[in-house]
Amino acid sequence: MSKYSVILPTYNERENLPIITYLIFEMAKKNNLDFEIIIIEDNSPDGTLQVAQELKKVYGDKLIIHFREKKLGLGSAYMDGIKLCHGNFIVIMDADLSHHPKYLVDFIQKQKQTNCDIVTGSRYINKGGVMNWGFDRKLTSRGANFLASTMLGVKCSDLTGSFRLYKREVLEKVIKDVVSRGYAFQMEIIIRARQYGYTVEEVPIVFVERIFGESKLGASEFQIYLKGLWKLLWTF
Image 1 (cartoon, one colour):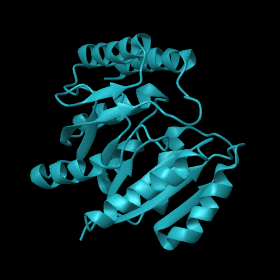
Image 2 (spheres, helix red, strand yellow):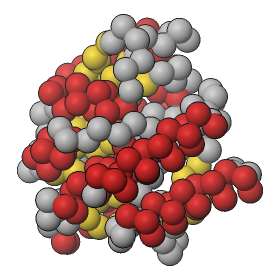
Image 3 (tube, one colour):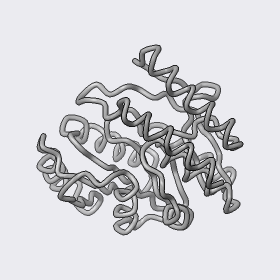
Image 4 (tube, rainbow, N blue to C red):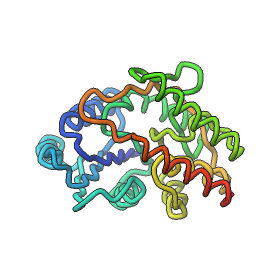
């Protein structure tokens, strides 16, 4: 039986963490799936660590907490998380409820049907979409993905998405070579995976803007994305 490890990087997610944890484990129970969650907590000032510790009392060995003294970025969070995973499949997703765990059933079904190496959630294929975004953010996201896929020549409708299911050995191999940060980090993983001959399938998802807490996306993130895209153009 396959085992699935969910890596959840957290920073100021005290309101969202109990909900996303409950939804993941309820989805797993309903579908008879073996899941664990690895929380990578970057010393949130809002008390996220204390919430995680209370959740640990409820879920026991199915929930692992890795505490870090400061924010060190998504890439290092995933790399630290991989070391703690027991599963042969690894899920990366946001802890802010923008990625609903119900889609994981579709991810797993798609992987079993195709035996692909990566399943990625897409906002930009049939039945996918976004909720509670303003026009400016929709335009930015669409533009970023169109620009990246066109300039880099990669067939993937949602290169900047961060809701994915990986075969463990695939993520372990690819992530070691990734040098980008922010938006470009997710793009580079798919580009390198394609370069190594790994197969990628897409599943439609509806991305929902967070209800609790503040979005970590800002102008600085888009600047990092543009710099990362430029670097990728010269690399590949």
